[in-house]
Length: 254
Image 1 (cartoon, one colour):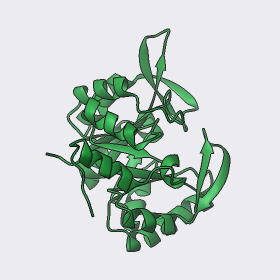
Image 2 (image 1 turned 180 degrees about the horizontal axis):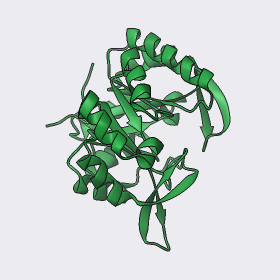
Image 3 (image 1 turned 180 degrees about the vertical axis):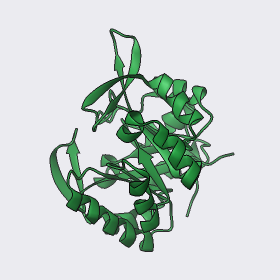
């Protein structure tokens, strides 16, 4: 059986890991390299870094973070945030990232998916999707710029297109569930997983170890991602994996 992945996510602003609510009230959590080393030792299967810096200085600092982290890390590292071109993607991959996560840039220029997949390989290209349910339309739509700008692109249309264009993985965040800590959006994730053949990482809503169990037992996604509950040490990665073991969910142990 394919083993499920448990993935911590670190938001990095100007070289420092931060935490906030909907990108507001950000406070510093710590040094990204030290946190990456800790998660590596604690049994994380991968790490996702999202660069939320708005300045060129922040982008330069992120390259430095990637280089330093890559020297210490023995698990795959995905970098997202502000990547707009083949040159941007090449820079983070050359600095030591294993994969890149694209969202706004891919929606703005879908050909970027084809170009990067052909140049770097599908396994390097993860498409991040911020999806929100709209009651009046009875459908999910894609959002950009950290969930601030709505597009007219239906989420279920977009996932099929990005797979067709060569994406190797999806990182799906349910905006309706994000930050609620009441569990993942099983309905959305189940539908998406049935529409594509590439791996799906679930994001948004994790509040307990049990939420990961429900996710893996009720959907066929490949991985679960969380930030706050791991940063605040409310739940440990080992607790999640031990519970997975007890429920017959296959996971990797260090």
